[in-house]
Image: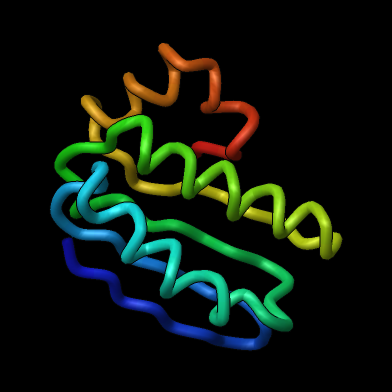
Length: 99
């Protein structure tokens, strides 16, 4: 998994590439925690994400809770059909702001 972050005017965009699963989810979480300080909008670009497991979903839910706690917003964009289907099946598409 590769993660690219870009911060612009308190908006953090995170591009996740590869697989977000049990092995890689802790790495993403470790990168996100300090990066969210002072962020008002968080956007996950999943255009390059091939797979997401429940461990990956847990990290995204945690990020959404952090943003809610700080009156921020979170959205998920560009998820491919397979990844989008996982959000739909779990009922997290609306909760996590999947566009």
